[in-house]
Every structure is written in structure tokens, then in C-alpha cells.
Length: 153
Image 1 (tube, rainbow, N blue to C red):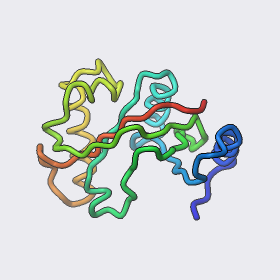
Image 2: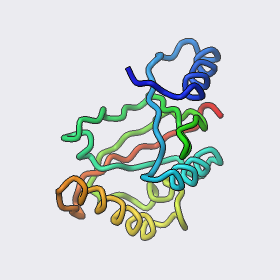
Image 3: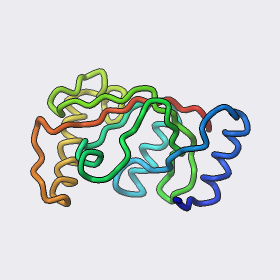
């Protein structure tokens, strides 16, 4: 059983009280690899700008993480691991990095929201992850692209 900060459990219980028919299962995580990034990207989500995220398929295929699924809920954390809000996954697609479309780059909500910006930032981010994992980053690496909506603030 995962232990979360009180703010996470409190927010989840308030959401469940308003939505008693949903499962009691949820995850809690922050975007990015730093508290600054978690705060910046979390703010974009709460402002309705960021409605998508992506990660290397490796984490699910070989890294032991649970594959995201449509309908699952996430309590979004800030850089201090406090609850910001709750998102619900509405789409999960696996595709090669070099085939991610400009429409998805726009949904990620970062920078100027172009595919060029998305590829530049994510090439750097995924390359750093791959270095830590001891594997090469390839342009055709599989990426899990998730779309979500904010369901609780």
C-alpha cells in the first residue's frame, strides 16, 4: 500500500464523496523530474492548458510501472508532493516517438505548443532518462501518450 501525504488522501476522499460510483483506486504523481517542473506543469494542467503527457513505453514494458488505462484517476502533485487536483485519463495511445503528431504536441501544452518544441524538449528529457537506464534513445522509441481532463480542483 502506498502512503501519501494527508492532502492527497483528503482530496481523494472529497472527490469520492461527490462521486461514490467510481473505484477507490487512484495513483498520485507529479510531472517532470524536479519540483520546479512539477509546479510549472501542474499549473498548466490546473489552468486547462496541458491536457496530455507522454512517457517512455520502457517504464511499462520493462520498468515495472503499471500501464495507464482509460478511466483511471491521478491525484496530481506539486513539487512539494501536495495535492493540486485530480485528473482522469481519457485516452492512452502507444506510438513511436517520431510519429507523435502535432495535435498531441499541442495537448501537452508546453512552450509554444508546436511539434518542433515538443520534439526538442522530449528528446532531451527521454535521452536523459535513457542514459540513467543504460539504454540508447532512438527516434522510433515507443512513447505512451496520455490525454486527460481535470475532474477535481
